[in-house]
Length: 412
Image (cartoon, rainbow, N blue to C red; front, side, top):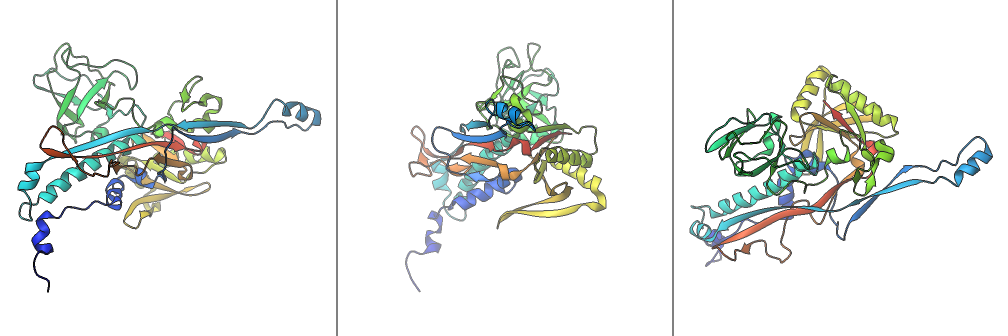
């Protein structure tokens, strides 16, 4: 048996080892859409065009001369969405003395470091997972009503209590009158950013540090953002498949989608007055009418529970495998062109169901969707002006849909 320094003696100096697989598991395990959307991880260069043919040449007629005449005035209709990347950062700092003073199994300093690193990975992951289901405005939710006047702290209730899952203690928030444009709100005439002091997840209430008085301007339907996020998010499903049809001049990645709204901006259906099962059947039929098919429905867990109750004894369960370590349970509904998998994802809005063909959707990024930012080869950086180290995670990427007409946004 070997003597001297061994693993037992050296255990206090061993560090928690992070591999790309481990980070991937942490990123994907609780975020079904993010996990299941296909990935392209070589998105370098200035931009990435996604060409789409949305019309065929129309030099056709049962009369030859008419077909020939029209052939000179028509051709295939091709557009290209020119994707550009957006970025998101998560930075955690660790105090050197704390790490050194807690070395060894008894003090478990490795667990403390792991806690911080895992936590910042999860923060960036949730930001991306939520953003993928929403718009590039990157708002967290809306305000239900003007808060009551109060000193030192004040409460804001979210319009959709389900969106409280997007909020964390210690975030810094700003509130605007609109998702884009509009004006920034204040709580006392001057203070326009607040730290989240507490979160009541049952009632959907955010408690902010700050005073709200008669000069405060926060109002119902205002939009809540993490400071520094507004307008800088990924173009998510609500951008690619907007609830309101795009109008002329509304450019999206360089494309005027109003020339063929369905094929360039997907389908829309108001199923708010329908039983959920009927809304899904109608949505599927609209996509099939376009010669396309759905592979998946994604929805909030509350909507999925309503669907299960609606299906009753007819419910069919499925387990969708992402990789050998990660899978997601769901149900199956019969579509006109084959079975459609229905997945619950807490990152989706409570009032939307997205019917998707996952064969046409990708997340394009430089490297992994969430990765350690270590281009200098250092996973930990020494702080220049403090006695500690810094770890950085993030991503550079964008969502793309190559055939929007194969997807539908259903209001419930």
